[in-house]
Image 1 (tube, helix red, strand yellow):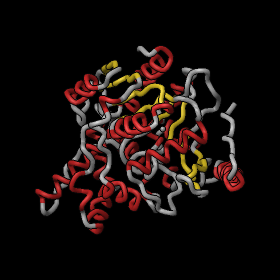
Image 2: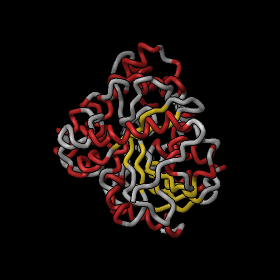
Image 3: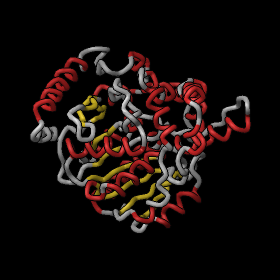
Length: 363
């Protein structure tokens, strides 16, 4: 969820400053199965169980996967409901160990000759963020993956793995290595822009191009929040999933939507917060220091499409223009009359830009 808010609590001076840090961070024929390798026995079993689990989940909870919170059935947005029904969990190895994380995603129905498009999401969000644009990208003939970043979304984190920036990067790399295995067009909105830049910097072979949407890339980590006592960190994180706070965040993130839609999209945006491990994963990220990619921006070697909303109330035009100038190989496009999340509010424009850039380097 991308948002911008102030938390009025005592003591005001310290708490407000910390929450503003969260604001900057706040600012989704099938491909063949991966090779199993020497230690493929356990992974083969996990994949088999995943297929069975997904098949069973598709027929329960009103057609939604069984791993989604039951509150998903209260969502009215037809695009969110459709994409939620396509969600599945795939086993992703953790580092060099034989254990895996059952990782949530939406994967394409068929491969394309064009390199795949991999859709990340904002801070504390999920791949449901791509509910409106995903079907348009498929209609455009793209092979689109919507992937939940480790620590957010609907992956199984029962074991409470670390959710630092490095852990998120390694998880995405293992996902790419296991299932995609081709240079990708990596798309990152808001803080997802930092996730994308960090990944492209460390794994350039895996990334053909980048698309950065209202990217939040100049917040140098979580700052003082990394030093918070655990009890204070958990208390602050508890507020992040509250309905009033999420509702206010949606009012800031979108330019012009009805009150009813704001309520419904609030439910979509906080659905993943109902997972039992969400609080632990979020505190793990906060106290790890978060993302600091400022020094990496000028070293990005890929071609980049920078998308900027003219009515963004969270990331300023000045910041996006700075990003465009600091990236060595970038073009910039503006989307009028749209807020911080144009892929939700104006999916046709965003999908068209991504499709044309994926094919031609220009749009």
